[in-house]
Image (cartoon, rainbow, N blue to C red):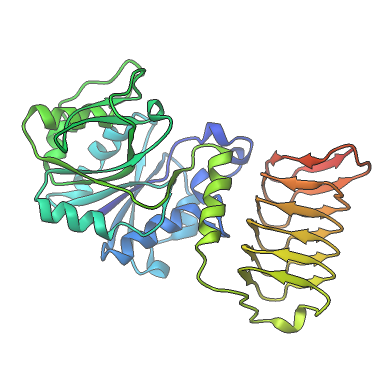
Length: 358
């Protein structure tokens, strides 16, 4: 079995962060989002993985290379423009060949990996196996109509959904999917819709089965989704108070809950409320950090308070007396506060910003 990962698109709902960074490289618990998908595949014994990237985009390739560091073989497939998920499969036919494959949207995060879904796909001997999750807003997704535990129709972002299930960004196929993507027509928005390909398979009496996600799953299309995914990943961290470099942690701190602590970081006179992950060369002084905070390398938090946030490398906080919360902050941002007019501060700031509050 092969793997196919999406890492293209423009991430318009995540601007300004995505003005300077591919959204699939935004860190969740200090790891690029896309790395979770690659690790899910490797743990499921999928070694040959194709990654769909934008034309002329070298950012993903520069970071992940040939995949050796993850124990996989990566092949990069360029998509000239975002013409739909079915188009992604269409342009990947040479890479996939006749193999079965797992198609995974790279901005999806879930607990538990993908091995169970692969096992069920093989057990059912399906042509197509979909992974579903119950959601409150199915009109945002592809939606199946289910009767007698069988999918009988599929529609893309319907105004009147026929179930409260979303088709998540995890799909399993045999080679019959290529007949579908080569025969459907573009939708009104000019894309080859994956739901139309699935409907084609149904009409050709191909076998479509499904699994339901029993844990949590996140499609990280919006800043609030990223922050929630970060919380969920931190909550499931295995390590607890992992101080490999404890000599830099003074004993006049208060440390609560699950903490992962990086090399050469310094904590003084502070409260850390886990779950929190702290990168390398981070300075925290006279501050409160957490819960649910990811601080990347080379950050500084001085006389400040932050919780429920993702903070990328090199960002600094100085004298922020009110709580920074539910924030997504890019690289090398400087934030300081002069006055105390706010009870809570919510920020989404791209790279290299300089912000003075009050």
